[in-house]
Length: 241
Image 1 (cartoon, rainbow, N blue to C red):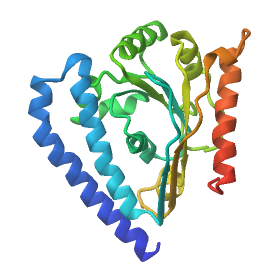
Image 2 (image 1 turned 45 degrees about the vertical axis):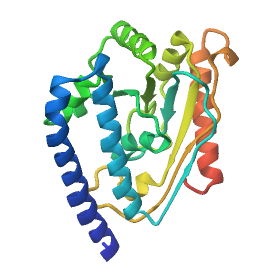
Image 3 (image 1 turned 90 degrees about the vertical axis):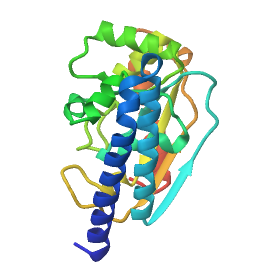
Image 4 (image 1 turned 30 degrees about the horizontal axis):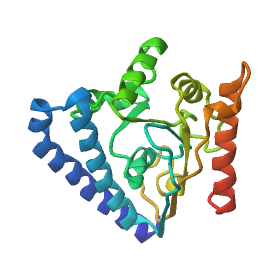
């Protein structure tokens, strides 16, 4: 372990935890009293916390690059590759401050933060029935939310296939999909590690993919393959795989 990795871990561990705790203590009572319509205040609180985590990630990186492509007007589905526990925070780099996350259930078991997740209306992908998930996403779209998913489902294999549920959802809701390419986070904080290594970080939104471009009974599978291909081709071109 190099000195930079040790210093990164201390800086991120102390700084990020203090940021999360202090902002939680300050905002907690207000969120309890005024969560906002359908959790909108809670979602913006999560966005502010994520921006703070991105600040510490940038300090710990070797290089930092964010590329934003023009996006469609209105709500979208954001589908990202997944290689690290840090990936959840990267959406905030693009200014998306009203998002609905569909994520694994362990997040909802965390002290305090689990309550914030519920207040924000985020969806537990492991326990929410599909019909209920669809209904809640429809309501979120009416509230102007983007829907964020990590279709690989696990950060253990950065080349894992994209599961089709996110794209079935996009087709059912008639929403374009924004591919989000995340490079370097798996090297900064690999799955199962507690050490924060210096790494080159690249975050990029790519051109939107539209449900109307896919037809037939397997349209959601074709869409999943296309979005994964765009993300992986981009990361390979940028030497981030």
